[in-house]
Image 1 (cartoon, rainbow, N blue to C red):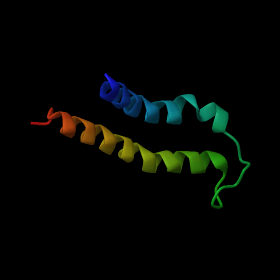
Image 2 (image 1 turned 30 degrees about the vertical axis):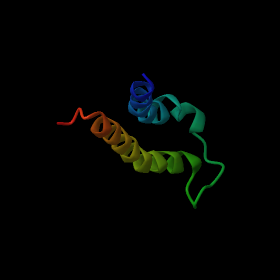
Image 3 (image 1 turned 90 degrees about the vertical axis):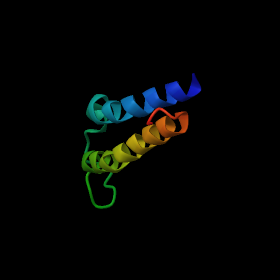
Length: 67
């Protein structure tokens, strides 16, 4: 049951972080790496979303459900 919960979290996390949290991070300050915070947040999740997908892949591979 623990691995299934982790897979569900990894599936839902990118959607929540890019859609539901967006109104809360929609601000200019602070400037992070020379970008307004909103742009930094979106670029951050462009990088983190494939990592979530890779985590899901590794969990399914360890379960043997990719055969």
